[in-house]
Length: 350
Ligand code: MRU
Image (cartoon, rainbow, N blue to C red):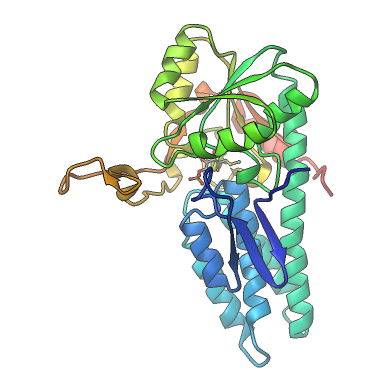
C-alpha cells in the first residue's frame, strides 16, 4: 500500500497529486468544480492516458454535484463534456471516459438531481476502480515476457502516477519483481517534460525497484551494447492496425530496438485501444506550449525569437511492435485481427 495516491474523490471534491511539482514537493491540488478539473488535466497536474480518463469521469460527477436545483442539467453537463473534451486531444481514454459518463446521464436523465448525482459519481468511481484491476491484469500478462535478471528500458511515465494505480508499463515491471525476478530499470528522462526523470524514477525508487535515469539520447548506446533486454512503454492511443501512439521519442526507440534485436512491448489497457481509427496517421497529435522546450525552469535555453515545435506524442508503426500487452492477453501481429479479437473478449474486471 503506497502512502500517496494519484487521484481521489474526497468530500465532494477531486484531489490530485500535483505531478508538476514532483519529485521535490508532494502536494495535492483540490478542485471543487469541473473547471478546476479541466485545468488540472490541461496543465498536467494529472497526466497519463488512464489517469486523464479517471479525472474526466470525476470532473463530470463534480459538475452534477455543483449544479443547483432548477439548473438545466443538459446544459450544465453538456458544458462539462465540452470543456473536458478540449483539454488533451491524443489520450483516447479521455473520450472513452466521457462517453461512459454521457451514457450514464442518458440512462438516468429522468431521475431526480440527487439520483443523477449519485449515478454519475458511481460511474466515475467504477472507471477508477476498474482501471486499477486492469493495470494489475496487464502486469500479470506482461511479467511472463520479462526474464529473470532483465534490464528493462521504459520511456515517459506509464506508472501508478499515470493510472488509478500500478501503471501499465510499470505494472509489468512491478509484477515481474513481485514474482521474485531481479529486474533493473533504465528510465529515459523524456524530454521536454521529464516524466521519466521526475516521475518514473520517483515512483520506482519509492517502491525499492532498481532504477537508473538516462538521457533519451543515450538509449541507443545502451541498446547497441546489449545492456537492454526489453523495452516496455505505455500508450495514449493504439489503433486498429496496431500502430501505437505514445510520448514523443517512443518511435525512435522502437526503431532502435529493431536494429538491435531487442523486443519492444506496449502495455495498453483496452480503454486506450481505438478501433474506430484505421492507422496511426489518423490520430490527433497534441502540440504543447513552446516554453516546455525553450525554458529550463526559469532559465531560457533557446534564443528569443527562434521557433520551437513541441509535439507531445509520436506514432510507432505496428511493424516494430513485438506485442501489445492488454488486461486480457498479449496481441501479436497481425494486429488487425489480434486486437479486434482481444477487444471482443468479456471484461475480466466485472
Ligand atoms: O503527456 P503525458 O505525460 O500525459 O504522456 C503520457 C504518456 O505518454 C504515457 O506513456 C501514456 O499516457 C500511457 S500512461 C499508462
